[in-house]
Length: 506
Image 1 (cartoon, rainbow, N blue to C red):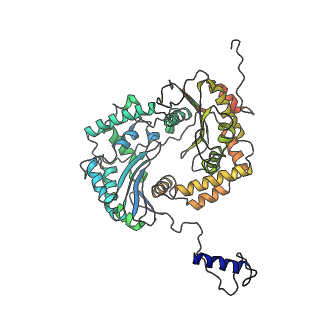
Image 2 (tube, rainbow, N blue to C red):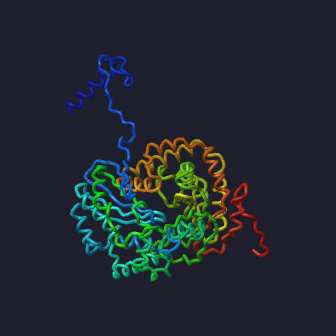
Image 3 (cartoon, rainbow, N blue to C red):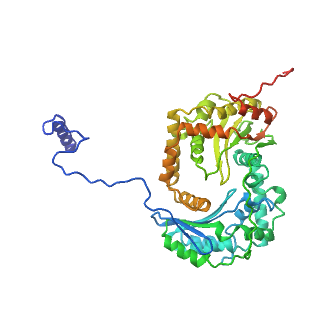
């Protein structure tokens, strides 16, 4: 208490102005040398280093100091390249990843080896990229690269492993249709509608009829064409670049894959052809989630329009537009940081209490892109819901308010920077950018591009987008769904309203 009293006395003495009558905290103190501050410019001093080996394999790394590193191989392979094969090969390869190889007798052996270095492994497939990744202690880098090389280039693909994978795939397909969250299924449907029968419109999940058609011979034929070094990037975060290059030379330079090498790779070079169209799935959604608080029966609609590839300059304005639309579920708690001031909350969810969901998504690929809005409501209100969404699309072409635009840009930048705090995310960013463009744009470059987006950019890209035919995916009870022609007419009109229907008998 005596210390507290002394503090009060000192405060009174200084605040009464007896010793320093005019002290301002914003100007330098008299008689004190000028301080030297450490400067932080927010830029990464460590550029992403890239080296290309003699066989065409690219190695990209970003140093990030710490005990652990994330290293992986990204391959230009995915469901979009399956035009000449039965769909589902990429799905199978994802499930077969890190199984027995030339060096390791089983998946357990691989996991035990990684465990010695505190490591974990994972494989993820998207429509255009397959990613094999390992996070482990930096000291185990040699083992990690050797293991990755073995898992990607020397898998045994035993009969029992393929049989097991068929079971896993069948289970996953059943699960996909039974999930209360229809988003993965709708995303699959909207791609099929937008790019009918080509590239990114090909099914990402193996169709049920193809499960029994896929065997080792077919997998080897696919791997021979697509798993070639020039279609791969070895990416690493948290390691020295020279060290990674050394390991790559040792384990990835003169390795003959188990499927042999082909002199002329038969690679599908098709460019995505946007077609637009509708995919409908009539489904009884009344018993999707039973229990003490069942989810009410809902009909889900997704409407999308063509945007641009991620290689074009317009990609950034579209990303800002997607952020400005935002949206989410009607039960999302949280304040402005959760996107409560985005258009789909302010104009849709806050005004129409009967809508359960309104969310904007932007899918982008190297040759095309798709901006969609997913909405769900009671089956009786589908027509009204579709009109609300088409009106939102038309209003995108109006002028964006300065405040909402700034908010969307700030939110996009903060999301970008917060995601890039995590090592696996940096790894994926480095790998994907180098795989598709051969270089990496650093976060501060992207932030500058976002800052430069103006409301006229948003208007310009939206006007261009609204010229494309819509892609529509509909799931659930579709009795009240307007026809595709009516949705198209609404998106070509000035106000986004559906053509009026006159019925003699209501």
